[in-house]
Each structure stands twice: as structure tokens, then as C-alpha cells.
Length: 314
Image 1 (tube, rainbow, N blue to C red):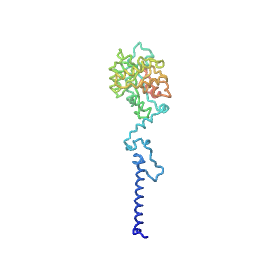
Image 2: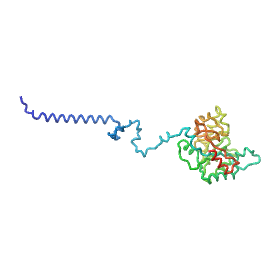
Image 3: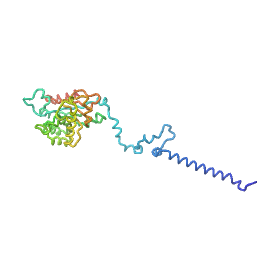
Image 4: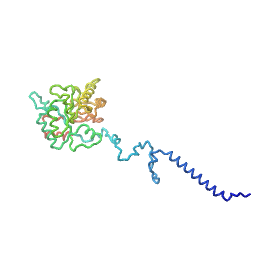
């Protein structure tokens, strides 16, 4: 028996088969696109490069969609903080320690005169530093240099003052400011407002003028002898009081007599102290940021002697 539509059967089957194949291909493409993450599909992949792979979304961390120039390197900075060994290998910055700035008196002992610098000699010291091209740096700059290698001026120096003496406010600070210098004043809070010592208002004024205020304990007790509540009395409360006076955090500390021990460091860190300054002893190999060296600028030294001492000590 012959069917009248037999000649048409082959073209119809061919057309239906083509439609079916096209539909199947579209469905497969749609499913493939749905199975990929939005981040992955937005990144073109060179199919000829066998090493080219699309990172998983977690590893892209979303900034992959942000132009490279707009991404801030905060994570890089945080991860580049140097370890203790690297910090110790960096060139030390000269740090000078002054106490009283006044003319000698008959009753001053020979030993005391190391800590008492006559006014004219102090002026000679500061002028020599300025004439020699030194520029003062503050603790935050020093910490950035030590921990990240941040750039400092060509001839950096830090000028520090211990014990809250009034002449630091009336004589030293104005002399520094004549040359655009800034200092770091470590305050012993028990002395605030007493005769021949700075008042709270004067401490605040120094902070407002761009100098840094650090802690020097409550009453100058040796840190190596602290126990129990001494850490609250000598470190915690003075730091809090100074922050209330200046309106700025108290982040730096100077050890009385320059004496310290490794046991003190975690106690200081716990109370927000970022850096601590001793005198001329060795630095702690595990935590050099809390055993930063200084030298006493002796009242006996001429400006020439000071310059030599800085070069020999640092």
C-alpha cells in the first residue's frame, strides 16, 4: 500500500530533529551558566591558556570586582609589620633624655650635674642640632619606621624630657619651637601642680602645641619592684589621668631610672602602652619596642661632645 505523504516524510523528520537538537543545546547552555558563580562568569578566561584558572569566590574576597587602583593596601601594611629581629637590625634613631634645664647651684652634687643642664648649654645643644640638619621625630613616626620601614628625615633625632620639671615648659619647649622642633614629655603625675613642676594646664598646653605627652609613673618607683596593684597605681591611673588632661591617648612610657625587666612588658601592653623607653641598656630581643634606648644629655657636655656621643651611641 502506498501512502500519499511518503515523499514528504524525510524532510519533516529532518526538520523536527533539528528543532529538537537546538532546543536541547539551549537548555544545556542555560544550566551551565546557572551553575557558575556571578563573579566567575564576569571574568573572561583565555581558553587557550591551560594555566588560567578562575579563583573561587572566597579567594576573590569581593574586591576583585574593584579596579586595582582604588583598592587600599591596608591588609598589606598590616601584614608587613616587622618581627623583633628585623626591628633590632634597623639603624637606631638618636634619642636624647633631658631632666632639669637650669643653671647649676652650689648645693648641686657632681653626679646631679649630669642631669641638670645649664640654660645656655641647652640652647647650644638645640642650636647645634638645628645647624647640623637634624629634624625631630615623634614616637608615632619612630614606631612606623621600626615596624614597617617607613621613611624618616635624613637626620632624625628625638628629644625627650623626664620628671615634669617646670623649666621644661618655661625654657626647653620655647627653645625647641624656635627651630620648629617638637619634644616628648614624660610626666610623673604625683608632681603635677607642685612648686617647680608643671601644672595640668601647662601639660595640656604642650600637647595642644604638638608635643607628645607620655607617662613616667605616678611617683617614680622602680618598675622592677612592682607587684599586685602597683601596676594600677603606677601605670594605669597615671595614663588615664594624662589622657583626661590632654584629650589624647597615653601610648608611650619612660621607665624611672631607665630600669626595666621583661616581666613589665606584658603589663604595659595590657594598659595600652605601644612603646616604652629605657636609657642606655640592651634592648629586649623579643620586644625591642618596649625597651627603646636613649642617652642622657649630660649637663657637662658641650654641643661638640653631644654630637660625638650621638654618633657613638646610635
